[in-house]
Length: 206
Ligand code: ADX
Image 1: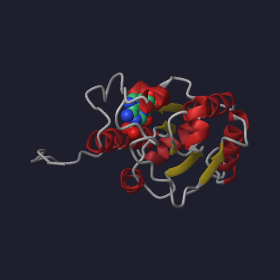
Image 2: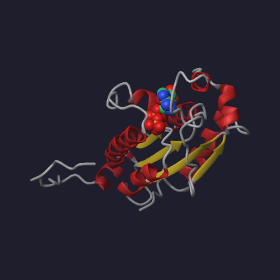
Image 3: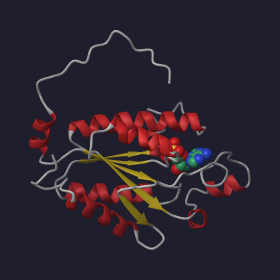
């Protein structure tokens, strides 16, 4: 990426992240759901968001299809555009995490390097990678938007899992197996992780 910004100075305020942490009673974190189209990322993200809000925790979803309606509407699906898609989302997630929210980001994010860059841009313990696991065969059988069919017939080119790569996470914090667990079970597994790691309670990680 060409960097064109210059002559800038970071302007710090007097309100700190700790102030917001105390105010909200939670530690900001980005839950990053990655996986093939039709893996169930958005469905699981919605359930996690609902559970957290019901428990009095401020959660907010960032979703591939939604963000591509606005902020990223000028991006397509080349490797370059996907990288820029993830970079921008990563920056938004970083701001929301700094604000103290539990961000639930669901994007195919097929490239390891792009996901790693988001992780590196966040603080330690602020990025939790969730691999929403499904085989191409099972995703293709689900095909809720009819996109795999279009990809097979050549109507869509460069579709992830068909004629575009998906790089499986190497060391995700959480793996949810959507061929053997329901979306509710996967969502509860994710919330249990957050709870166990202390993101939701009084004993928040430093
Ligand atoms: S990502 O690869 O850049 O992370 P993102 O999650 O934002 O993708 O968007 C994926 C959504 O775009 C899919 O759910 C699907 O509806 C749509 N889509 C359209 N074209 C493609 C394509 N070539 N590959 C994957 N998804 C596509």
